[in-house]
Length: 131
Image (cartoon, rainbow, N blue to C red; front, side, top):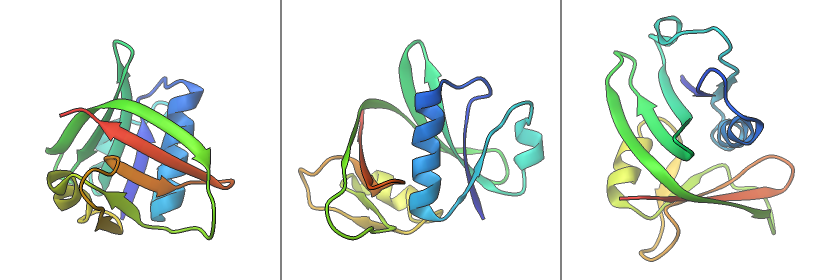
């Protein structure tokens, strides 16, 4: 099972982003509080952090290896039109190859935003990842 979480003292916007992703993928959301990574060692973790004002999106495997880590260039939240889709749509092939192991994902056409998913309360989230 995959867990979606944030850094320990995350701002509300970062926690909301993690909750939206957990909802979209069916993963478990964990408010970290004082929970360290040792307590999560038997599960893959999708992690949102903020470092010097920049949001980072990372995937940590069960053994603690960082499988993926990239800065997020922008986050856009819009009202979702139509029915909910519980699949991540990912334009970057290298990002798709990593995330498909941890959640339902499908490749998106080239030129599309990096990652698009449907969150809670009729929201659609678009993450633009930096290279």
